[in-house]
Length: 213
Image 1: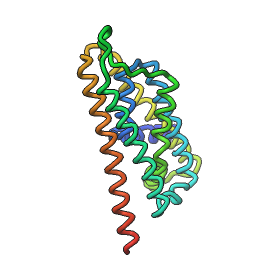
Image 2: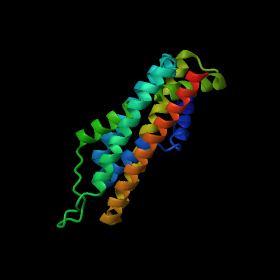
Image 3: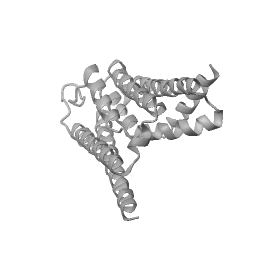
Image 4: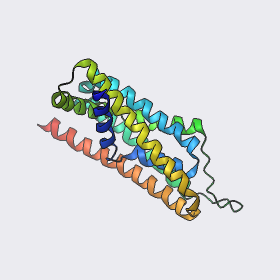
């Protein structure tokens, strides 16, 4: 039980490092309701648990090598850029004159699939979890079974943090003007593109340096 709590606390702390997936779910929450966005949160949690499991199995070492890292980073970067462009397009869409709400329509299925694709498109997350587990194994002297419980707690933190955050946003968003919502859509899209471009450039530079040396 203590190991589970340690994993949850670690996962909760890691959530403070807000990334592109969080901003994408934020965008869904702004343009839909809590019932719809929770499917996106479930998709992200599912992928996190998948990657956590693979990290425990040691798959991260295979993905951290030069060409593999470049390939997967390129794919994930392009996915981020595409989703960013779609988000900006949504922000620039014409507002329905009768309701004053942007024309973007989210469904539970669309929310789940979109978040699943966006999250799973970055398999280098396995490398991230592998490094976390390696450090915590040493810090807490975790055995294989304890590491599994630690991973369960860490993954559950993703669901709790995102669910609570999006619930709060869902409760207050009614007071947000439609123009602000459009601006937020464009802002989220810009951030996604930024993350994608930055990730790609950083990896290419690292790959070139490793190749030269």
